[in-house]
Length: 278
Image (cartoon, rainbow, N blue to C red; front, side, top):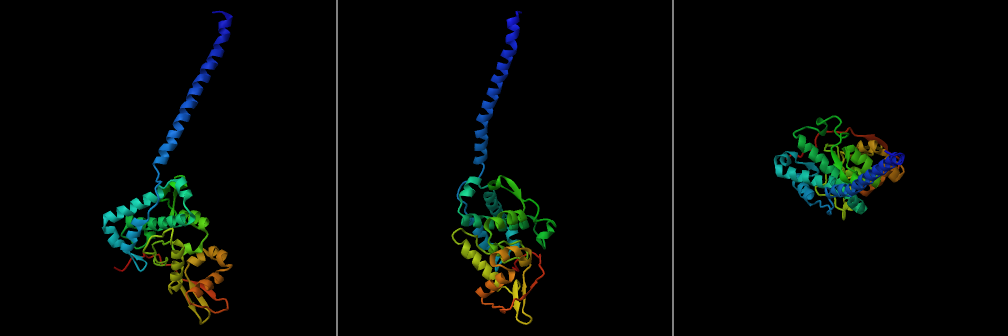
């Protein structure tokens, strides 16, 4: 073998490696759009319908309490709920981000409440949602396609998504955690067209409920739900102070406290299941 031939061999080998690298990069680039397309095809892009959820709420919720016993006995209705939740969780991120704010608010409120009921039904019978697990609200229960397939818990859904996104204290009277001391569950789905009025009505109903808000002129004491203690900052941001917020909302339902700032006390929170008496 001549010297010139020996010199050419390393050069030819480098060219060969470069050729292989180009082919590899081309194949990867060709495959990437296919993978992205495949992922996109697996998520839901159609306009979200809350009709099935609305039917179920009308059927099983009365006076704010849930007839879990009857709901659990009808397997078809449990499947409808599961499928509804799957549709919400599997909604495509680009489609979700294009939704108007009212649509996203109704979407996430319905998602939370439906997820809570689904969790109860999957573990029914029980006396309290906490019987499932003492950390039931912190355990991941679903993957959200519109949140980059992130697994979320109920607490994450409320405190990392809904509260910081919408910054509306009225959501605390709409999210229902399956407990007696929770707000009463609305027996209709939240809808984009009505969500603002629905939240206002839920807030007014909460303040009318003496088990949640009770003012005593004797001693000028205002006894309220623990929700106001746990999420105090949300109400202070909305009205400057918790007392201001409570006074403002009480006046809307004609429960006028003293002009003097009332002493605020908090009810004990009952985690007993919000099972209807039927």
